[in-house]
Image 1 (cartoon, rainbow, N blue to C red):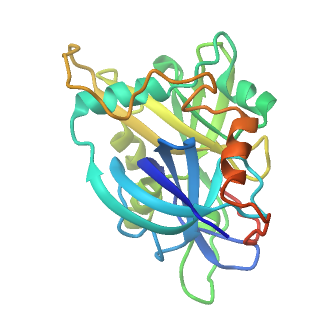
Image 2: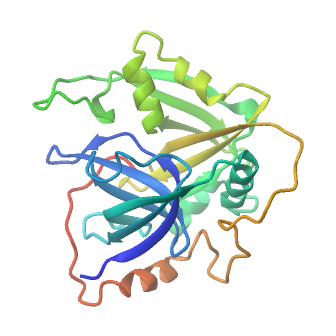
Length: 274
């Protein structure tokens, strides 16, 4: 099978999780020039161990038969080719990625379209932080994945449409924060500046393979500043009729089909998180 080339910008990295057969996998969300917002997944530490947020990457990936979400791709190779460091560029990219859903709630909007990625701006005053306990169990390899970590960070938030949500935070930074500071779990929320009025927040959201179960892959935060004129940003375009970076399902399918003419798919067990 031919693999697709994906030129992307990493905007969210999920914590490692376990598949149904016990393997460790990891996902990231990337803004790609070819397919808009996509989900890339691979065996833990095999492909994404050296990839960080805001890095520009060149990847090859294929579609799978087990993960039928339109935006999901199985990662084959990935190389870092650059990085976005300018905070003003980051802000413009984040604002550009916010789902244009009008007066509708972004989660309800994407559910109605059967799509699985969204970037949303929460109403700041509605943010709440909770830490939930869950069973933590020993594994044969000794690695505690996000699905059985002792604490689970959750954020309650409200969209501009007034709909209230409560989602688990499955970002790799949250996972590492809880792992390294088990005695001070609430510190992860301080690091995200969720309640700091001097910061703006953007939520990178994705659903699991349970279509109506959404999680927060990353909470972006930038300190509020006076808008500044910035240089041209290659990650922002005027878009096209298909709605980049939120492509229509039929557009994504047509693009993906070009790399899979024989419909021979690599298989993978269901994953439990984005």
